[in-house]
Length: 311
Ligand code: GLV
Image 1 (cartoon, rainbow, N blue to C red):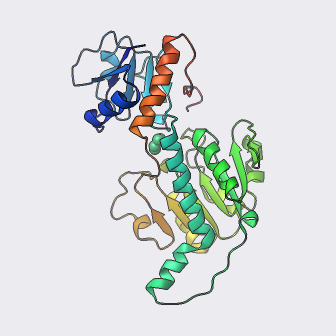
Image 2 (cartoon, rainbow, N blue to C red):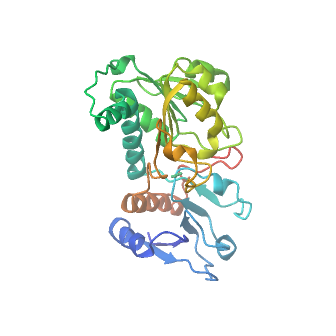
Image 3 (cartoon, rainbow, N blue to C red):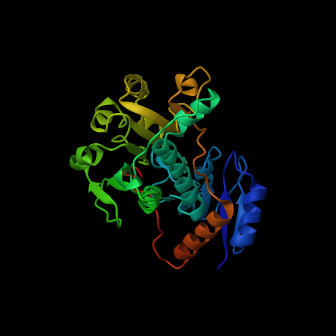
């Protein structure tokens, strides 16, 4: 097998990706996109921040490999012809980084590390208790590739783990709730909520006062989905009233998060600059090579976004 793949991205390093493909997928020839470059005849493209006009310059494009898991910008882009398959990235580097990030934040909230850090700064030797992990109710909203892996990991670390997704799923050891009518049961009494939902019209603003109300008093929130899923004013009120005790946020309505934004200096909010998880070039190259092999053999691609559903 030998195939050409265009890298159209305003931020990615062509040299780094080229070397990753040379190591992990030498059958795939990487082609650099440049403004005005004629890319006729090439059927595959990968991107996160595409160069202007790339889809018009690729009339033979069949599959667009997105270098990330959240594809809302692509499924909503009317300039991408309908016959082009939009493919979400699923590769071990991206998944494991997300597992680590969520585990880190869950452990922080579970063990009250923020209070401990404050106590250290104030030179106070404090006493702090915590429940056994199996008594800690943790829930993951969104059970796609990342949410599924994260829920399994949390379960593996002994937490009483629940999951919620649009359609029914079975994950061993995890209590899974499916569909809108089950969301209240999923949320009821949860102590740590992880959001890994895709951004769609239905999930925009879903992390709001109504939802917080279902959680256990003093629950923690971890948002690694998209910033637009969070009602920021509702979060601030819930933290002020003590309804929520802490939030770990990696994604924001406006990125970079503007300097005057109250989240930056809020004592109960941990801000990370949208780096919870990023693709690993070599394992992404391998994943894309496997997808291209499937396409070349006339097989269906995996992780293809459904434009109607929006993810
Ligand atoms: C990053 O936010 C991604 O969607 O992979």
